[in-house]
Length: 386
Image 1: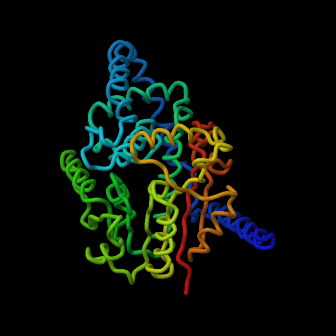
Image 2: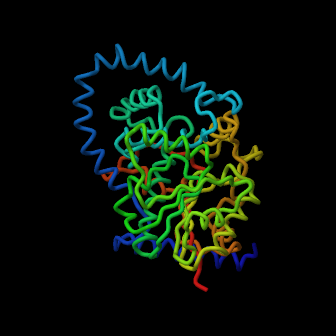
């Protein structure tokens, strides 16, 4: 990119950051520090610690051995299993269950908002998570472990939830499309925010069948404004499928594309982004996440916390990462990418940045709760006015 163009993009980035801070001060920004979670953990933690102190003998003599056994016998094979050997989930997406596992972990720690994630997990995984999160209340180190995905999910969930609220309240959208919805629970847990909003969940027929069965088993009923749209993303056009299910393309829409892009080719991602700008009315939004592309680039090995392990686990599960933003790994790259495909960048969070750590991994008292997988980016994009 020419120096003059780079300077112009950097100037726009600084303006965006400045406007984001100003909007945050007025309480109307898409920016959301996890204050609600921070407030809740300060209420939850003392009572939880008292209860756990009273039950420590039971924990060490019974629950801890069972947790270790569950991890060794079930969880480790579940993480490492090849796609063809997977006997736990039949044809439903492994990623959907893994995401629900992460959200349940965060909720159990008193941080994440997904109070329904448990419904999608078998009993042994629920027990394993509850046992594994007990040390969190004493050491605050659990978020530093492994791939850092727990920290990413905290930030990603907060960012996308805030993006939806911003698009509804400030942007006047009337449709919410959860693309590759998996076991997403926003239609349930954000019901009050989504009154009068048509919600469309698009995913494979197999995944949706498993989801609906698990919801019924848990006694949960999807809200009346939710429509399930089975789709084969390889062969079917998203807009056509949505229209077949009553989608009104003349209304402003926000599309949530969570945890999907990194599993697709760069060409597929670019085509999807361009289709949003071409098929949705001005004022519509796309909120998504995407990696920096470090694949097959040895010089980046060990540079981003947790990412090398995440790449290996994704490959072992048969759902490898395929793409991401190309170098240079700077904000200007992101802004230029989307402008070339017809979308304006409203907000951008680089997970590795100090700003992201302050927004999503810092409690009100200033304590950090750990680290996240540092290679991800969160973006809110808008279809510009004609």
